[in-house]
Length: 164
Image 1: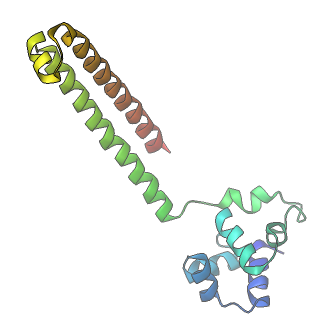
Image 2 (image 1 turned 90 degrees about the vertical axis):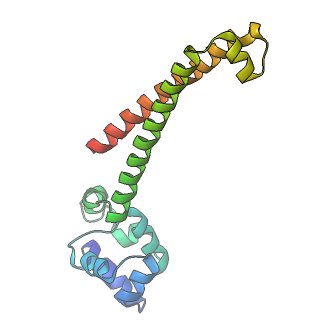
Image 3 (image 1 turned 90 degrees about the horizontal axis):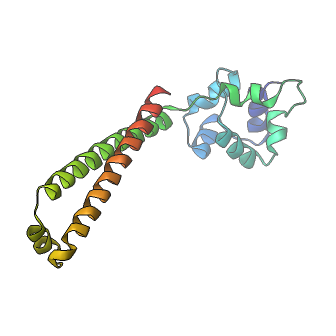
């Protein structure tokens, strides 16, 4: 018995329509149809939800390894992220890129501005004694350098996510 047949059997046994299952799981009725006909398989999260709805164990719903087919081959290998999950991943990547650009610009601007200021200007700006101005300059430059480094790391993470 296939996973789709088990889902259909449990749905019928419990008196649910495809529409009701779709509503309870938070998916479309067409997705339930595809599961039952074997055109696609539910994600692990959806399988867990189905097992709770039907009141059966995940192993009972999926058939476990009793079919001589590893469960990874029947469920996980065919699972692909849905459009919302893909959009969320893409949005996170774009946010990382935007934040990286902001960090890089802020870091470069801070280093440039502070490097061109004299000790008197820094002491007035920071409200410290002139003797401490060079320490303030060093602190700002270090912080700005860290911001630029963080921007580079975020950009690399964005590029890695874009490749996938």
